[in-house]
Length: 52
Image (cartoon, rainbow, N blue to C red; front, side):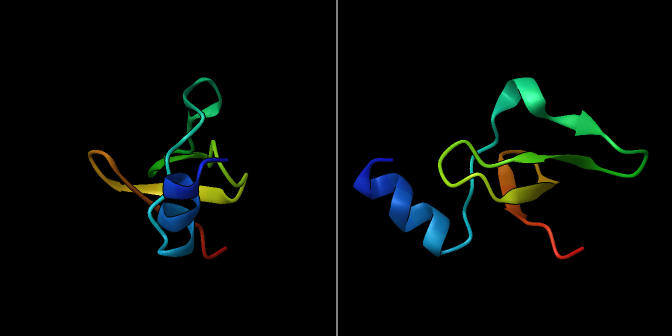
């Protein structure tokens, strides 16, 4: 994990691991490519940590 990626993850700005992104019926969900946290897509290119 690069330093810039670390800053993004600590400020809740994640990037998905694209091959693992799926549609759950309401939204796109996946895992962060840098920290592995479960994330959900809020808007185009805008991913946040999942609360469930």
